[in-house]
Image (cartoon, rainbow, N blue to C red; front, side):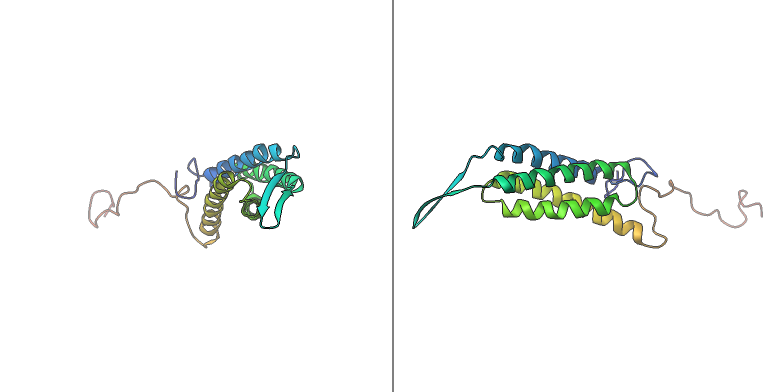
Length: 157
């Protein structure tokens, strides 16, 4: 496996990035689903205690988590355009996780780390494929011998 997460030789699919996105989406869905129950958080200030309801944010987070998990699974197929779709799903997921950091800090750190690693792999994969004449490590031909010396029996001279 090369640094872009491509698996089998010639596949050119960022398998690691897709797996990370699917895992991050699953974590988002499962943990955000628990916040949809309607339990309120309480914030203490100098003016007193205030109830903070994040149910709408939790439903938004569930929807984004489903989109990220789906994008991760689509990236695993290796079809064109899935990398762009995955990036467009993972960036809002990172933003929403950062906004909800005070309410679930461990989950937010975990998901942002997974999404960030997947985004880095996807950007590297896209950049390697965009260079004209570039050969990714997954498509690089096997080890070859140097050219034979002139006059050697293998050259036919």
